[in-house]
Length: 90
Image 1 (cartoon, rainbow, N blue to C red):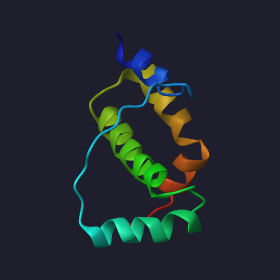
Image 2: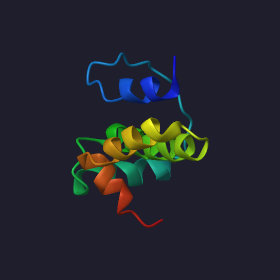
Image 3: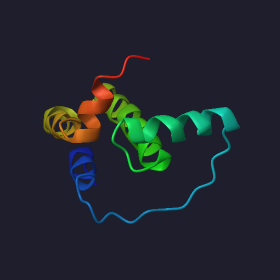
């Protein structure tokens, strides 16, 4: 599968989800739970997925997804979570 097609697939809302286990410090999870609703997320897990997605899109863009892939990555970044995360300064 081409990288641009893989990126386009990420726009689908009905993508299957996989359950994972991720060990994180309790205070980080507490902070995520506290911050998520203030930022318009329904919970800490969607916020965490948004953070991971932002980093992944940046890495894919740096790895040379091609011009079509870059346009798709830009479009993905235009959604609400993408606009929110683009404005974060960490």
